[in-house]
Length: 489
Image (spheres, rainbow, N blue to C red):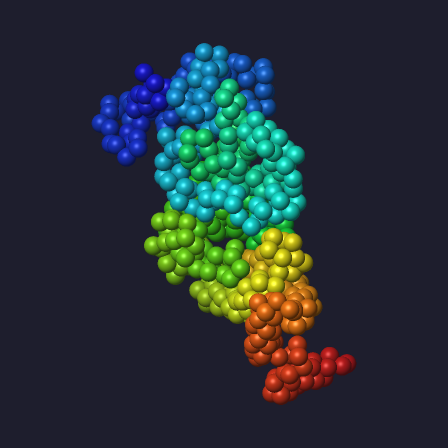
């Protein structure tokens, strides 16, 4: 009998529902609490050793609901002999990594939702522009390991991969390659073929729901110059209310329904995952998001889901927005929520139409005049930071009501660098290639010049060339006069 057959037999003795199968059982069995009737012999042996060798781990497990349910080390780490990462450990076959596939033996619905989310796909960054920066521009190949005999970049291993996840490599002796383990990145590519790491949010070995509900858990990854959600949250009224009222948040409660079990403030989990009176908990964080603000130009989430082959492609943004509004309505009036979304949408449209779309078109037009290696030109960094750092900050700031990030860290930085760096660098490219001997270079320079002229002729850019519409000048002068009159005393 395999470890999983043994585990299933034990669970069937205590549960009325396993993996969707209804089991007819005696009343005494039906009354048994969820979990195993007693801790298994294998887990008892594990515990006795870990009490001595890794006491902190043992204590974390002792505070978990797993402990109360008699779910021990072996129930999670037990493996089949033919598992890629299986190894013998004191006469038991185990695996170091507990993957979503393992967690799904008990938490099938949660894992199903999670694997269909963008969180589980975060490891796909391994071939992206961001990873080129970390591996090539910032890094080298000096991190040599058995799994990477040609070397790897420590900047990627200890940076990108620790949030997004690495492809965990199992060596011939069953050990895990040091370039890929330890790793709790939320999109980790596991040896069993699954994607993701439940422990990214439910940290080992307590696996606490309360910890996952706390904003700081999300802040491990959602922070910094390109996606500062943690900082934005802390600036927002939501974050201010949370930290002022954390003692009222009831984070440890099993049932955690906004408006019922707590009402002082929302957390990241409240808005994106946790239950309302009308919605269950979801582990697909995209089901309440109506804009995807990760790309150069913001797009609707079903579009990005379709690109990744996720079932969310069939869930329109309007449905997701109503899901989020359902959360908001626990504390805010319908009019307040509606008007917030009007403001948010307008900021997205402003960014998309004034900077992102024309900026991307200009960059494409400049490509024939640039050195071919990515990030070998100053303008590569200029444009990347405009959309990837400043553009995201503005959009995320608007989505989470962080005015400083929307403006000073966002649209102000975008505008400053668009007009004082990006456009001048493009004009320099034109100037240095307009009279080139190479006819292709000359043609590309002329095309770029035409695109610059087209962009700067748009009404929102006319101020830059001192061609502001007369009516707009009058409006600005009138507003300035009214301001001075109001405050001259």
